[in-house]
Image (cartoon, rainbow, N blue to C red; front, side):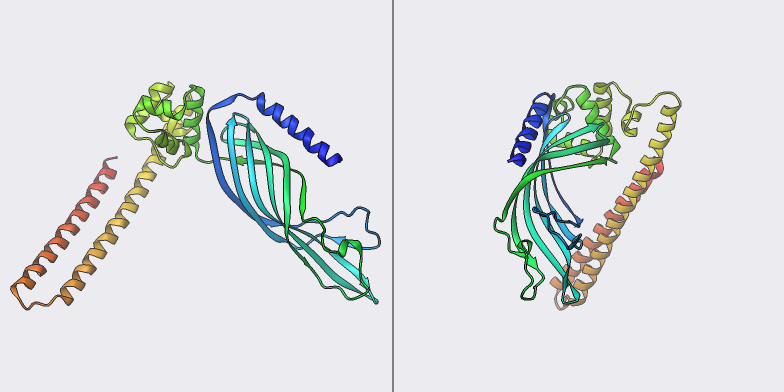
Length: 328
């Protein structure tokens, strides 16, 4: 009964805290997965005497996570997890010991309030809420006759429930996207409203803010006017002034040049692959193409011409790309 009262008390506190928080203009949804290894130990009531209960061996665990953030400092998080639990026990028997291992595999579904503190880039968080579980497998070391105890018996109730919680922190490395999101929130705009102002979709804004894509130059200029901040600061992912502004500008130029160089190398690899594939296909066609009629000769000439034009265009595109990088 006490466990039931604790859960209701936590739910009431969480509900009051959530209702008091300012809402986000646009809810955020996160879906992810986690995996790891864990060790567990068991406590028995009534207490088991005259035995040595040790931790269970390490076992893999994992699950899926769904989070809905409708407030600035809290979110609702639901999970479905595979959690192995159990214990290892050294049982005295006929002058020796039996290495007894028991593993109970559970599927657990916690419903948590995700409370976080700090800025967008570095945050600490607290997860707290009720959970239910169901034992899907019970594995135990076989015991000889005459060795028995209540805690060796099969579990009577596979369902379990209780409280779940945890503390943690995370650091986001994509500075530009996070900074763009902070600026939009500071100006009280949704992704749709910002997209309408600069002529792009809300999905495009989302890609910029997650750091998957960079805004083009014309959009950077419009964002600079809307947010009243320099392009240099947007590219640096933070506000700056004086010497910091100059240093940030140099860093942004260096990063931009490295990205351009990397982009050019990737483009060069793609073009060379296309060039190699086109050449190989042309050679194969010429080898297996019979030259018995005028039509066959015309086909051969067309194949060679198309391959030559395609490879020439690839080389021109590659040269143009390198020239653009040199001009930068």
